[in-house]
Image (cartoon, rainbow, N blue to C red; front, side):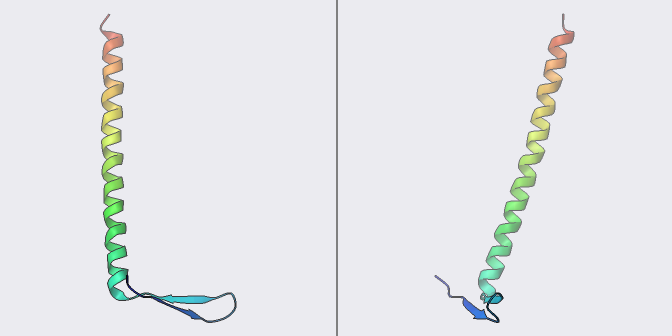
Length: 62
């Protein structure tokens, strides 16, 4: 496990010093998470659209 340092500035304010390697890893994971969420939003939209089109087709097929 990597170490980080907490530097106290005042009673209410402090600064956490995190190594660059950990910062880069966190940024990479957040970006991946954002891309995954964006992908699922797109698939949900297309799935909902397909369902709505199928429902309208069933209604008009009488």
